[in-house]
Length: 353
Image 1 (cartoon, rainbow, N blue to C red):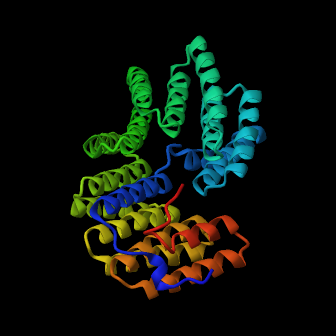
Image 2 (cartoon, one colour):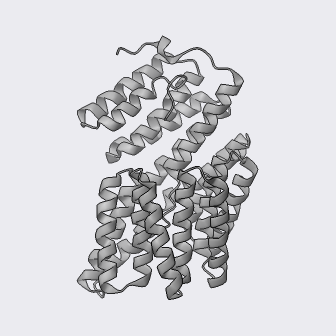
Image 3 (tube, rainbow, N blue to C red):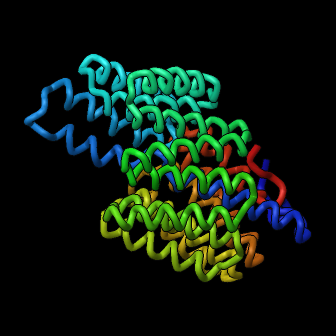
């Protein structure tokens, strides 16, 4: 179907505009905030450690690969790698690795839209860890249960589960997992449409990561703080937090997270009625993604750019960008992202279902 400026639809009323803005912020959060912790850097280092056994190095490599597949929205590959890592952790009787690998398997199930399998896995392992007195494992599986509950829109139950897990982490003194639990609580509060509670959870997480000196965790928490401020319509505060996140990810040379942060910044500019800056920021994210061959980042940046173009009334600019997007993904044979790009051509009509 040929695209035209008219396909962008009629101006929206305040209520529908607010709904779309909230839905977009949820989409941005899901794309930019990972619950998995910092497995990639931890296990990448282990994979390169010659003092470890070949089996341990291979398991570590699989963990790192699985997390990257999760972040890149590749559930099939993530599930395969995480299951292979899990089997190796079991063979080595590595209790910490077993917990971490199970978390990744469960997240792959969720991303693959198999929440019941994730719930069954998390519940079974949670009971095993509880019986074995492994409180870290028990708490982590509770977080997996909470993630499934969020997916199933059982949000009150999810908050209760997160609170129980947080109590366990406080008991064993694991501040990093406490901080991770706060990020998951932020996600639940976002789905509950509770902006003030979102901001508190995100801020609490940031403070914990700062105490630990965990830079990547701080960057993720700053993104959560940014999104929470945008949800509270505190646009300048949201933009400032996103800039803090960007600075961290630039220092870490983490280009994928730079793209995610620029996406948040583009949304902030659009919401603060500075769509020209929104377009420029989204195009920067697009350039980085294209240079990396990072398809998910290209899709994210395209959506933000189209929103900014339409906010400034430039339908022609939006459609030109969409056509470029379609050509890019079609030439790569990526039908999923090509179709998603096509839907973003009509942001006032089409919304994710």
